[in-house]
Image (cartoon, rainbow, N blue to C red):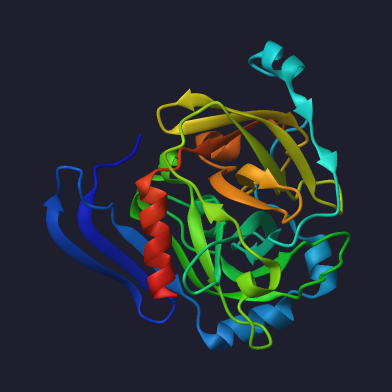
Length: 301
């Protein structure tokens, strides 16, 4: 369940550690939940760029061990589930590589519309371990990563932002986060690969396109199906093939096959960190919490 909104912002930087700017306490719900932010210095960003060699990317493992083909608590849902299709990817979606103390891993992330043209959206658990843990390191994004190819280069992180309730309680309803990336060759990432718009308060029952980077293949996958209501603040998407690595995959409304973009209305994450089984995926419901977090990240980037 979503935590009470508090007039506070929690800031964490790689240099200064954790700062808490506490306000007046719990509000009536009109103000925004507190945030957690980590800045990435230029030295660490340069190290990340050299750290992620093609071989190291190829050896990275998914952040989440989602189970393919395991017995489902609801066999009827599994029988009705579609299967994802392997394809060669789109420019605005890519693999997000990082280290978290237990090795090198990856999730999925995508470029989201912002004033500064440098933001990605992904699952919070891809960039912060949740309650009792910290932020990941060596964060780098590869748009349209496919079979080891990096057609748009490697973009290093400069800022990571999640909700305070994620860092302190692993609140599944707030399992979304943003990554600001450095420019590459003097160019902003959204100006190079394009971006998806952010959509909030769209309800349930809409058709979405979901694409991400699963385990066991060198290529991304996509699937189109209905985003159903799982709970008050959770969406559900039934489609087989979304094994580990697809956490953070965007759920795109009104996908345009010509521009290869749409409106991001969710990311694989939330309940069970996106789902225990590869044929049922979840997302936190997108409302003003994600919108305000995006705006905060944009201003801080």
